[in-house]
Image (cartoon, rainbow, N blue to C red):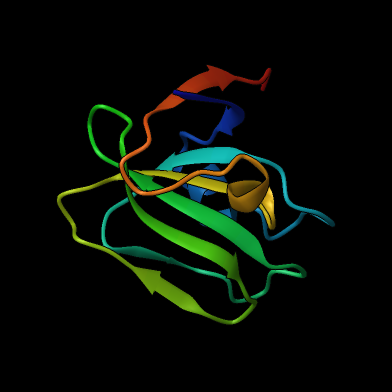
Length: 104
C-alpha cells in the first residue's frame, strides 16, 4: 500500500480550475469521468486513475501541457501529482493507494 496526502477538490469551481492557477503542481484528488486535460497548465503532472477500492487502474507519467488523458468511464477517482511522483513512489498498476487529506 502506498500512502499519499492530497487536497480533495469537491466543488464544480475547484474541479474546473484544478491546478490552472498554481505555479507548481500539488497532489489533488478529483472525481471525474472519462478524462482530464492539461491546457493552460504551466508544468507537466503525473496522473493516477483509481477504482472504487483505490487500486491504480491507469497511469500517466509526466503528462505534458496541452494534452488530453482519457480512461474507462467506470473509474472516477483521479489523483494528479507533481511530475516524477509516480516514479519516486514506485507506483504501478494494481497498487493500492492510501489517501490522506491535506487541509483545505
